Structures are given as C-alpha cells and as structure tokens.
Length: 139
Image (cartoon, rainbow, N blue to C red; front, top):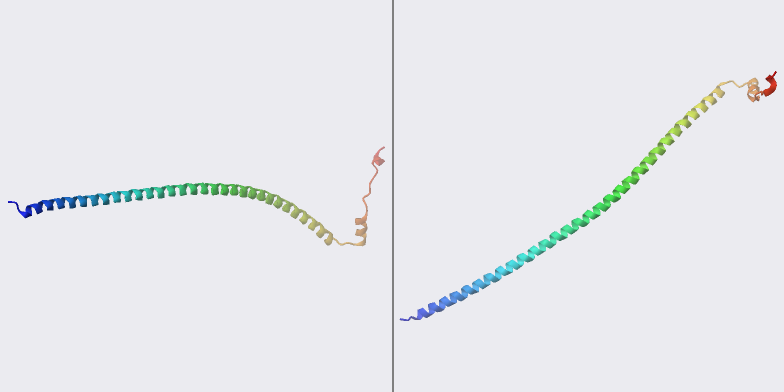
C-alpha cells in the first residue's frame, strides 16, 4: 500500500536533507567569513601594535637626542657659571683692594684738610728734601 504520502515523505526527507545541507553550507560560509574577518582583525591589530612599537622606538631616539643636547647645554652652562663665578671672585678682591686704597686716600685728604695751612707750613711743604753727598761722611 503505497500511499502518496510515502513518496512525499521521501521527498520531504530529501528536501529536509537538502535544506539541512543548505543550512550547513550557509553556516560554513558564515564561519569562513567570520574566520576571515577575525584573521583580518588580528592582522590589523598586529599592524597597529607594530606601528606603536615603531613610534615608541622613534620617540626613544628623539628623547635620547634631546637628552644629549640638554646635557651638552647644561655642561656649557656649568662651565660658564664657574667662569663667571671666578671672575666675580677676582672682581670682589679687586674691589676690596680699591676700597682700601680709596679709604687710605680719603684719610690722607682729611689729614690735609684738617691741618691748618699757614704760610710757614706751605714753605715747609714745598721744600725739596736735602740730599747729602755720599762721600761727606768719609774721613
């Protein structure tokens, strides 16, 4: 007793099998697409990381160069500082010497101003020292 439904159930199985294969193919296609997308995403991530590493390496080189320039500038500035410090020390010493001389000259001027200059003192101040001949004391 072959029923028309028997053939339809066979064709239904065949359709189910075909639709199952189609679904499997679609799932495989989606899986392949997802795997390809993941691989591409991983590749982009690796490229970003590599670019970041390259940028950091370039930044290290730049910072080392700047550091070297700063150290050179610091060394020159330190040398200049010590030269100026030495010059200041010399100038302070000279200033103290000149201040001392000025004070001595001021004292001499005060002595002259404070002494009463009279005509008989002027005569004494204008006199030349009397020099004796060297052979005068020989016997």
